[in-house]
Length: 418
Image (cartoon, rainbow, N blue to C red; front, side, top):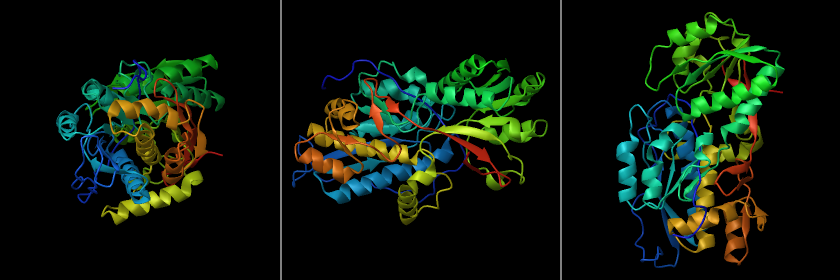
């Protein structure tokens, strides 16, 4: 294993409902025969990758866009024919309640994958990170945001394309204060994502002169939230923040029957397009934040991703959250393998910071083919992705990120706030 950083960490989570269509794409197929150095007869590097993304559990609504991003990247990399071909084994991470990862991770490791994409939830990633990096395999999350992962002892093998909740917490805490709220109640999922993000929100909100008056916790798998709702409402806060996953579907009807929606704030873990899940007007004026570029700025990519997903036999995507981050994770892994001229996990990890621009010595490029040409011509590529510049630091964390602020309309769907 090449020397990279000996200690590192990563992050987080999101929210919940849909299950992947039964026709979920299977791009893994039969891998081409490879030599001992990971090359096929034509001299291409053959890189096997696995996914542990939420097909079930409290973040299942994120599974389709994340798998769509992975699949689109693989299709484009293989079609580019730049000296590397990728195969994928898809798997379900589940959550910390159903523990689907307990069977998925051993299956992927036994299949010989060199990197595992996932999980979406930081709390779930923390359940199997030791198993993955202990096997000498890269773990690469498109959605983890927990700050607990930044300095985790990951043997230099953990990366993420989502930024730490330190940034989202600061943006959200300041947003709530700037909206004129002086007191805040919070209902928070009791895991590394929930308590971590809530802590950063509280820090920013109180630094802006506000006071957090209640912050009850709940656990993954809970189905009744009446005590948490009562505890928060008893303090008559100006605003309420819910840090949750798909539990939000149970929390909101009860909460909003007694609290105005325009004083409600959500986070990336539950900032979904509710649509007809609630009566029209239920969410009007509610706001939330999520890492990632404004979807309007990456329309062309999202159209490609949606078309790819449907062409693969799946129902149209209802959400696109973390699709771009998943796509970029695969592109970066492929570029790092080309730069290392190897499919060894340690060698790839040793090049991921470089190809993201983290060493500051590369030539800017914005597609796999463009970056691959730079590498194949003997240069250093600096990939700026569809999710942002990325630019890994020594911990495998992106150093540049955008936090979007969204507001809900009468139709219970959100759009970027002006």
